[in-house]
Every structure is written in C-alpha cells, then in structure tokens.
Length: 361
Image (cartoon, rainbow, N blue to C red; front, side, top):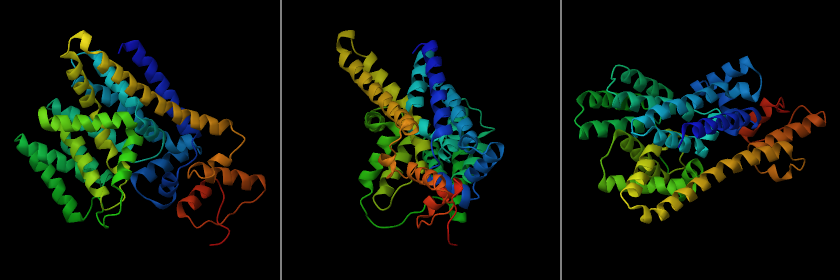
C-alpha cells in the first residue's frame, strides 16, 4: 500500500472515529461505568466530562488512546515487514477492524490496554527491557483479564528460555492468585460457545475472523511461533474454553487477539509469493473479497449512525439498547417530563445521563 493512500485512509479513519465519538448515544456499559464505578475508565470519563459536558468530552481520552494504538501498531508492524508498504497495509487493515473503530469511539478499557500490549511487544522485540516491568505493572492494575497476557508471556518465556521474562510474568501471575484478581470463572455449560464466535465476527468482521482462526492454526502446525502468536492464540483459546461455561466479555480478550493482523498478512504473503504469477489469481481475489467485506462492515456502522441522525422515524431503533434510551429521553423532554421509572439498571443510568431521573427512589 502506497504512503499517500495510507495517509488518506488514516484521515478518513480519524474523521469516522471523531464523528462516532461525538454523535453515538451513550451505551449501557458507558453509563454504568460513569455512574457506578471508580475504575480507570470511569475516572477518565469524568475527567473528559469536566472538560466538555458532551458525548465527545466523555470519550475524548479513549479517542486519544485509539489514535495512539494506530501509531504503536504501525511501529509494531515495521518489526514484521521489510517493506514499508506492507506495514502500511497491515495498519490499514487494523484501522478497519470494526472492533478498533467502535473501541476508539466509545469509553472502554480495551482501548487503554491495546497500546500497552503493542508497546510491550515492540520494546521486547527491540530488546529494550527497562520499561517492560512498568508496562506489566500498568496492565496488572488496569485490566483484570491481563492474567491471560501474563500466562501467554510465561509460556513463551519458558519455551524460549527467557529467564528474566519468565520470572517477571510468574511474579504477576502469583500476585493475581494472592489478591484473588482476574477473570471470574464459574457457571455450568450453557451454550455460549457459539456466541463467542459471533462476538469475534463482530470485532473482526466475519471473513477476517475466519482467516485469523486459520492463521493461528496454521502457525501452530507449521511455522515459527513469536510472542505475538502466543499472546493472540492463548487469549483466543481461553475465551473459547470459558465460553463453554459462561458468557464471555469480549473486551477481556479483544486487545490481545486483534493485534494478530501482521501474522495474518504474513501468512497471506507467504502463500502468495511462493507461487508463480499465473497461480496467484485466486489468492488475490480472496484477499479482495475479504477486504471488501471489511470495508462493508465499517460502512454499515457509519451508515447506521448517519441514518439515525437523519431519520425522523425512530421506531426501528426502539429495540436497540444504545439508541432506545436516547429516543425515550428526547420524547420525555419534549413532553416536559423530567422523570421516568425503569427496572433495568443500565437503562436507568443512560436516562440519568440525559437528565431524566427516576420518579421514585
């Protein structure tokens, strides 16, 4: 991918993220975090809200982390590709992932974790070890699900005989156990295994996720396994195993899984470039189809938001957990009503953000 095309794509990406951050109604997760949590996500939301009491103000720090993730990912990709054009292409694909676009425009912990994970891998592969313990410490306090990251790093360090990294990662795992932190595990087989595939399809787009799954499996059987592969594949494996017994929160795993784009592009290039030009057509066609599906996924997200902004018929949005409270709040305000009772806690918080309080305590 040529530099000028990449720069245009980056500009359009920035416009799309800023538009979504400024216009998308507050989500149930954001509303609950804003009013009932004291974690880092909530603190950043309140800090942004104090700067500008708007939806964009609420999300401004997360937009920043999203842009920072793109910068780190480009540097990250340069470690995997000798040609700068390939690094541009990998970063372009990463920007287009629905999980990155929506994650960068909404308040969530995943978009804070993502640049830390990218920075860790970049510094490790550059053999800059001084900052690694501090990044690991930040992940430990920010994200309970970073236990998965530490397990992956420990397995990698044991296999590759990196004693310092093994001691560090083992120490953090012991801290998780001692403090009883980490992902809650429980329940009984309840049919969420298929659901996790749907969540990953939403994060990656369906065809990209299929190729991601194929890439992880192919590297497992045939190719050299990097730290990146261990982090992404172990996060994927844990999420699949947990989904057998309980509903999985995709933000626990997405930061560790989505960084595998360079591995997917490497696998594609390895399959393409070993073949003579006359035998490359179906690989090139497949790549174009996958890219078209990715562009379509992003286009549908943007069009849906634009349609909501322009539409006068709001009935089609009544079942949407993001849009319905906003529509209800606007309807109540138009009628001069300032309170409304609802049993759903998250919906109540959403209405509270739109200045609609409960009628009864």
